[in-house]
Length: 400
Length: 112
Image (cartoon, rainbow over all chains, first blue to last red):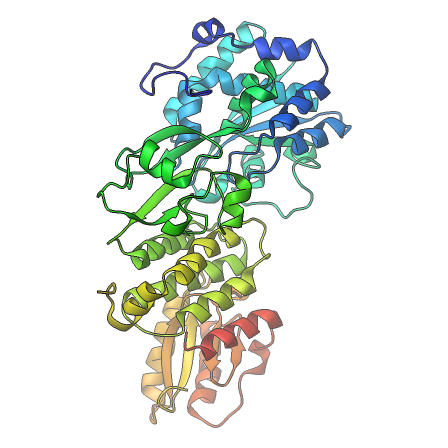
């Protein structure tokens, strides 16, 4: 039974009257009759992790926010869902805006923040319009008393979704990630403690507070299945579900009906082979398998599809999507793309050594994690499918 | 060295191309066509040398000379070295960090 996606995907947006019918804002009312620490405890016991990609424990951010004394603190609702193939945050904001707003208000209560900024990509007009209307409804009903609310628009550039790039944009500068530390929880928006949390992450919080942590455990996440699946769309998947079940039961198998050759949990995650299909979808299990859950923007590569072409497509994406701030990132992304172009064109060379050298050089450098994000799919594809790359490097074609 | 020739790479990365590396590559090519009578050099473009803030970067291999902050006015001196027996233009060297130079040599050693 779905916990969050309780309405048909094509239903009209859930406005305040609809949300109140399903006990909306009762979690906020309940929380405000207790202490901020109770909310943090509930989130901790539920083991809610960030759904933006990093999977960072939410309670740890909120504990820091609660413990930090400051004249002003902020919550940023990060709707900078720039990962290609991920649409769940946009869907939530456009269709279930009050769940996100209540989650944000709970975060503000738990961390002592008096300002909430909704950070939404400028071309997501449905989500922006829904957020504006729902915020007005919540304000009028008194649910946001004592909290200032702003809706800030993110540029469409990929790096604008990185949490400190978001802070830069909100402050009126270009979307360049900040050097860390300090982290946003220490010195974020306008130098003040800021809890930056992904849209989906916050949407889970009202249910956890209202029903208790057991309602959520073992957890669930929204996944966006792209058109490489027979049934693309946004699905709610209990954590622990195997990747095989995700592909077959939720996605209806591959679009072409052929067996899975590889799977990508997100464009910025390491590629997983078909032999990993029985891996349960948990942060720990995916990490042990060499990848991560990412933001759940899943894509499959089916037998017969060209892994090299896919790897080149991803490398080109990162080459043009890096922000240009950090030289090692520019060099790494340009090099990986150029190496893969040579492989695809049948120009043999020490392509594995070249990608390993440049990714080793770049690792840990730069202001954000894009350096690692570009490296993960490239290195994993090279190591998992050496015959495909070798055949391309020799002949410019896939192996027979 | 390829076919006994020196490889002369001009960076075509984002910063360098914004600073005019495409034109500089063309100008250098023209000068080499006129002056490199013995065809000692082979001119190429390179995706990115990682010394973006110090571009335009030009690299000579296998000499392992890393020129930075190269402008059109520097080309006559660079070409003089490339076609003659003179020394590299020292004032354009030693600008980028050592680890950046090293990864460039490591990559060029692999043939990239």
